[in-house]
Image 1 (spheres, one colour):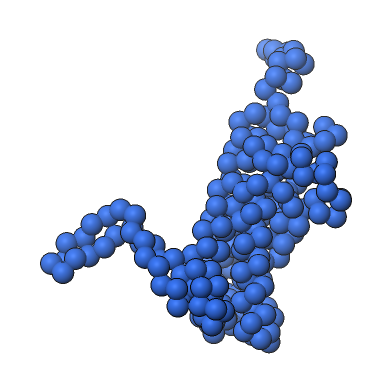
Image 2 (cartoon, rainbow, N blue to C red):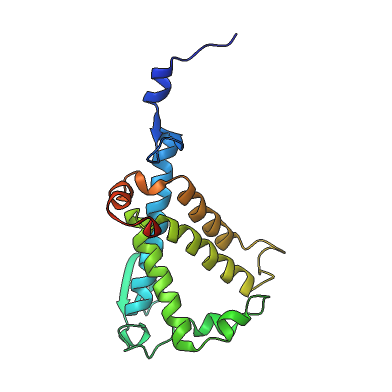
Length: 201
């Protein structure tokens, strides 16, 4: 026996994600989309600041007696930061040296300076865009392209014959968040759309 749910009850538990009402999600789904967006944004932001300023983090330290302590352990080595080293240290050199896939020719044929700038600009831009919920169209397609480039620059992957789990998940998640208008939930997406040209959305 089917039970008819009143329209008002459906609307009460639904979040309109876009400006014209085409994208609607259950409230829990909207909240999870926002949480995923912010979480991914903070991951990219951490990578930007760590690689930009040589911040080293580990969750364990071993003392002279061999005892391991767990916690948040930070150190700073400015010589290992792209920005803090005066752009002398390359954050991409190690990765590019090990590329072997069908798209490896793209980073391999660019100068180190362009590779480094492109990488840092990409992860910094994704970090700010996803965390704040702005530039979601650019972040969606840009993040998708970046992760596909990484995936197929080291193809076949080491842990699966075809699928690079991390970069597949990042590529599709970021693109999905763009289509879901996730920047409008717990983000600045609506304000951004109202105050910037369409090509910046």
